[in-house]
Picture 1 (cartoon, one colour):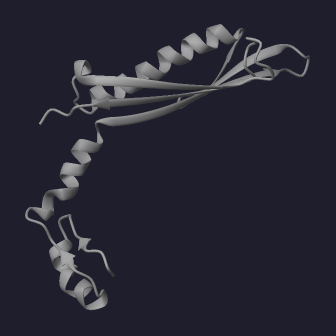
Picture 2 (cartoon, one colour; picture 1 turned 30 degrees about the vertical axis):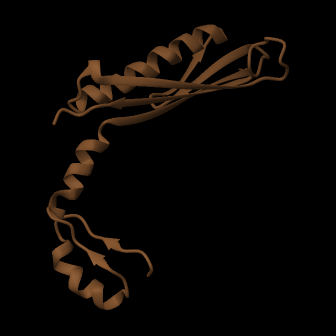
Picture 3 (cartoon, one colour; picture 1 turned 45 degrees about the vertical axis):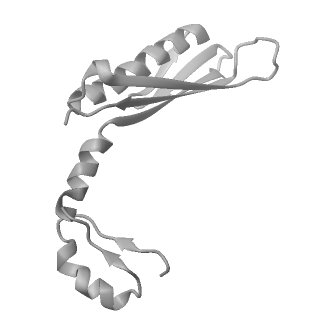
Length: 142
């Protein structure tokens, strides 16, 4: 291999010698490699991504429905604006719950929302589908 292989994690010392015999590569074990995964786990808790989908649909009796799909399951709403408002609140709430459980300070969490609509026309009509992606980034207490 033309690139170095860097090993991290508790057991890397146990199999580094055998790996050097199998791979023709520069095998690197950095200082403190045994805690590399632990550090990654702590830092990784500072990011959370949630997707929520809103779809306009019709029931069997041709009644208009607005369906919302989230990590909590499916919900039905009477109007698109109602579903959109609920989705924005729910997405922020789920991100903050995750960050709080991970031990992050609410004041250090930033939430970005990306909204993509699919519409049949561009005349300002209600979209047939909206996908909301919430990405929360927090700075872990170290």
